[in-house]
Each structure stands twice: as C-alpha cells, then as structure tokens.
Length: 215
Image 1 (cartoon, rainbow, N blue to C red):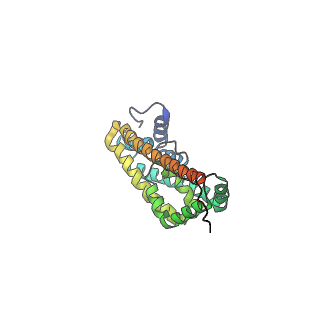
Image 2: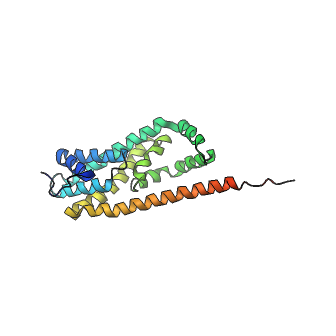
Image 3: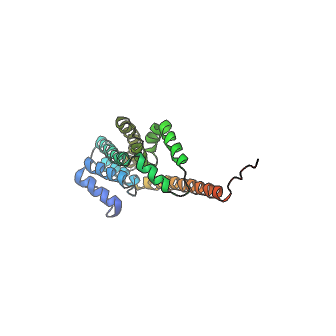
C-alpha cells in the first residue's frame, strides 16, 4: 500500500520510498543512515514512519521495532569507529589542536568515566548528540553490552515519541519536524555559544598571563 499524499522529493520523499518498498526494514535502514549521517533528520523519518503505520503500510509495532533496531545498528558502527580510533590517536590529535590543554582531555575522560552511562542514555534523546555520543563511548571503550542496552532504551523512547506523533497527527505529521527542528537549532546555538566562550577564555588567558611572584 503506497502512502497517500506522500512527499515527492527531498529527504521525506526518499524515506517514503524506502518505507513503501521495504516496509519496516526500510524505516530501520533510513534511521541507521540517519545515525551515520546526522544531516538526515530523524524528525522527518520517524514521524513519516508513524504516518505510514497509521495508513496501514506497516504495523505500529513493526515501525517501533525496526526504527529502534536501525538506531542501535547505526550507533554500534559509530561506537566501533571510536574504538578503532582509540585513545592514543585522540591524544595525539588533541595535542596538536590550538587553545586546548592535555588537562582538558583528561578532565573530559574523567567526566565520561563518571557520567558516561547517563550521557549515552539521555544523549540518544538530544538532537545532534544522538549520533555524536557513540564515538566517545567507543574511544573510552564502554562495555559493548552496556552501550547497546543504554542505546536501545534511549532510542526506543525517542523513536516512540516521534513515531507516535506521526501516527496520531496523520497527514499533519510534518508539524513534528517544525517543533523538533526548533529544539535542534536551540541545541546547536548552545553548543556554538559554549565553544565561543571556551575560546574567549583561552585567548584571554594567553593575552593576560599570570605574573610570577617575586621573592
């Protein structure tokens, strides 16, 4: 059964074609690719999948199962990339970056050791960080069973909210993209602001070095 009033082009049209052709596995494939290529927006793919479930193209249970499986599959690929990249390469690259110190990386590693489980779980529900959080988890070699469990639970919550929104909104499913898009832009603004503040502090520290005490 084809989606009525389905988008003809763009990402939504591509995702609709996948779901029409492959059903649940097509939705899972789209979300796996979204994890690997964050510019592919889950706020389009997931509500569209929910809309397809409402139209009988696939069942709601199938939509949730396959999209969550796709999220986990994409996250595991990024986890393995982080693990293969490794701490030593990360430290070598970090040492060459301007305006950063080795102690910054050490603090980040200690923070991840203490809060990594929460970061992976809640990060799956935050736009932009949904994909990125998998890489440091791999670099820090979080146990894979723990990573998969946290990713599955976090992804299931995020996917369920957006899939159900598309399911209940019907042909108004595109409204989800608008609201989640605002959230994504807000997160991006906060990240950019934090980076600018960090650079400003580092530059000020370089321009105003502490004077040594004279005996």
